[in-house]
Every structure is written in C-alpha cells, then in structure tokens.
Length: 199
Image (cartoon, rainbow, N blue to C red; front, side):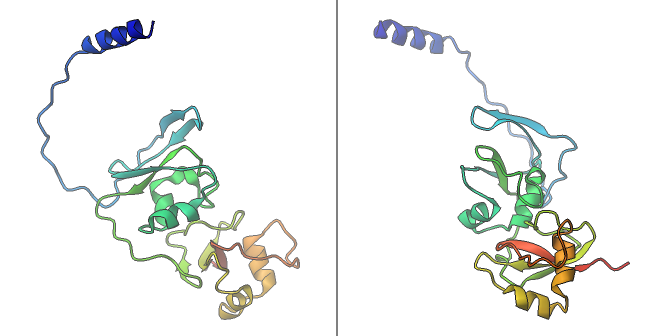
C-alpha cells in the first residue's frame, strides 16, 4: 500500500503546471519606513489562531515569536533595533507590548534603518515619539519618559530625585487608577512617565 501512495504522489506532482519566471521590474529606492497600510492583513496559523497584522510595505525581515517571549527578549535576541522600532513596524503589539503573540510573525527590519544602540537605564525621551514598552495604564498626556533597564537601573529613588518629582506625582502619572499614596514601583525594562505635556 505504501508503494501505491508513493506512486500516486509522484504522479500528482508531475501534473503540476510549470511556472514561468517573469522579467524583473525596475527597482526604485524605498523610504526608510513605508507608510503602514490603512488596513490589516489576516494571518492564521493553527498555533496562533486568527490575527490581524499590520506591516510596513517594505519590511525585509520577519521573525516568528516563540512562546514566552516579550518585546525585551525579541529585541535582545537580535540586538539591532529597539522595542520602539519594533512597535513602529508592528503596531498591533501595542505600546505596552501586550499584543505580542507567540507563533505570529513580526517585522524586524526595513531598508535604510540605522540602529543607534540600545536604550540604557536613565535614558529620557520627550513625547514626540512615545517609547516602547511603556508601563500599562500610563496617562495619555505624558510629556517625558525615562527608561528603567532590566536590572532596575536607574533606581526608583534616583528617578524621582533627578526629575524633581514626588512619588505621588509619579504614581498619578503611571498608576492613575491607584491611590497616589501607595508604595508603587517602576517596571524593569519599561519606560515610565516623568513629566506631563506642557499646556
């Protein structure tokens, strides 16, 4: 019986029509990041189910997320882009990276991108481009962010003192649904709000 199936499979393969190569189109320079398409594309795999993903039209490298990974582990695996870039290329992962899903591919490179090095604890950014990942629940009107690396650097007390803010202010901006007098802390490997936008 095995021989019959093998012969049948070979016969079926022989019936597949030949594919002819088409001539190459002329190439044009692509921008660093193409405009993201207005709608998402359906992606389905038995392991991930149905997901709607958005990718830059000029994405040149993809990576399929493995179980247990987060934005930090994906960024560390390749060490040639930041989580902020990962989000820019894959907006469905969300700014807090809770949308990153196992078995779903993510774009990890576009033409012309230059990696300026990883973020380190204590780096600050203004709200011109919201960094990723941000603490879940952060206020919408945050005007400046500071990064705490995976080792907890810069320490929380130093974050407060160098930015001239109180723990109550920090709590209100980063944990707005919590009591401002609670003893809350920063997530290691995340950006937290250190100032509100100027009115």
